Image 1: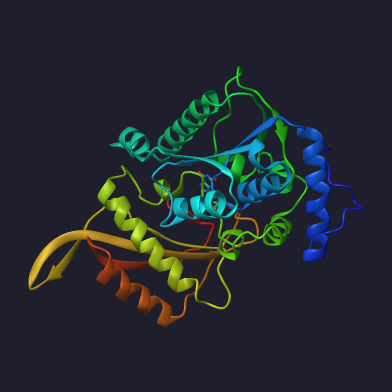
Image 2 (image 1 turned 90 degrees about the vertical axis):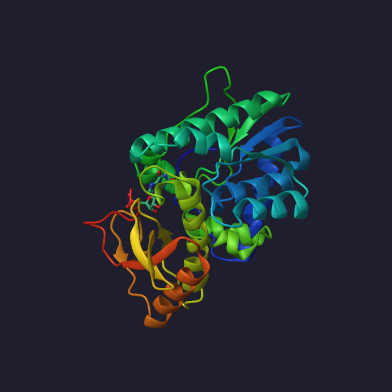
Length: 323
Ligand code: XMP
């Protein structure tokens, strides 16, 4: 498949067009792969999930999906990947819980870019180790989408490091590489993936690692995961969803008071933004009720947190993430 989207290619906007695309790709994948085996790093994000579902439909167990849990995923994510792909779609899914490996190597590391590099490097190491355990893999499937091709110097490429070693090069299978994100979502729904998975907000590769600022500790990370789940649940009830909405826990303590005694805890920062391309972004002015519910739930439900802040800064001058 060429890397250029033909001008005549119709935008996939409905189930009928998605089904036609799926049929065409299933055929193309079968032709490309034959009876050979394919490997896919399945993050649980929209793009890799749609590629997984397409390949499962086309070649079933010839596909092996590897889901690496780096310990920086959001609440419920690894469980959903296992439920959807192993239990419901009967895929060959290798689940690697590498939490300790990531968190041990990140201990004491405060610099954001060093954290990203460590996360990227261990991710590749774990994936390569799993790939080497498998016999006869000849293809690597990837969730490349058209904006990745158009903006190969864009946000994703800029933030994410990595690549496979030279002795482990496979022919690529990239069935959605000519699609825009909205089309990938329509195809995902037509493939029967859960709505929440297909329409989920973008989530950075280093995950909660860049939202637990400074040196990550397990207790602060666990508080972040709980607070983030509350933020997503409450903002998720709004009629119009922001592009990204999440919690951050900065690497500092704040004073709280309980039973008349002062103690040190953490503040949680709530952030919600809209954007079209993540290059600039506007803060979403959240309804008062939502802010109050989030505040009350977080301090009541998340141990160690005694303060809730709302970050309503725009990009520029702030970036979307805190580091
Ligand atoms: P910033 O913070 O630069 O973020 O305004 C722009 C967009 O990029 C996402 N982001 C990342 N995505 N790996 C990723 O895959 C990363 O390291 C990374 N850092 C930021 C961010 O969530 C936002 O959508």
